[in-house]
Image 1 (spheres, rainbow, N blue to C red):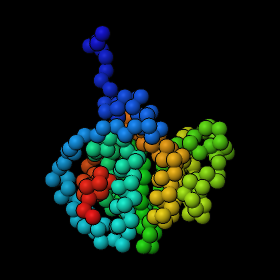
Image 2 (tube, rainbow, N blue to C red):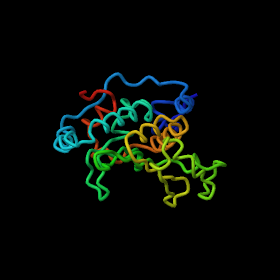
Image 3 (tube, rainbow, N blue to C red):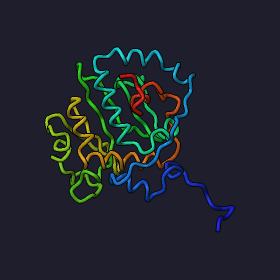
Image 4 (cartoon, one colour):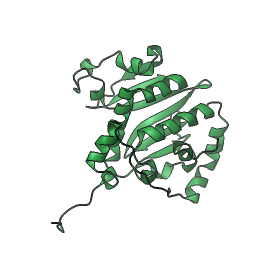
Length: 223
């Protein structure tokens, strides 16, 4: 029986119950997404000039292909949750000079940078997905695993930022980034981290969301 004291689901649980989230995490299902996206012309226009600059970058074709792969495989029900539970910023004005950055809640999930005419990426993930015993101990990291997942050990390095269950993986070259995104164990780690932060509440970076970049993440960008 319902109670006036019962609470409505929060975060991603508004769209997918825990069982559906677990099934998506394991690649068993692709949950039905919203048929249409919410949009804001004012928000699009706010970042239109930045988007035009991004289009002129030599990395743009590879960047948009990677973003489409990320949006299709790493974010559950991306149309239903766009902006409110995840966002992508275009040429954000931070000191590390990224090309794009994907966030959820108050956390960075995935960032792409220029590396000459190529790309490099930063993934923030759970440390426990990369330790040999699933612990939070940095000394238990399987040091060879991140490079193996990218298919190119020399293109990968990693660090632990000091928080209990955070692990930063940096991958150089578009080819190695795509390999990392499609390696089953890496994909599961990315999905698990994204579920954690999409479930923590509404996205704190809604004001910097670029609908034009998100078009490509959702397979709606111009070829």
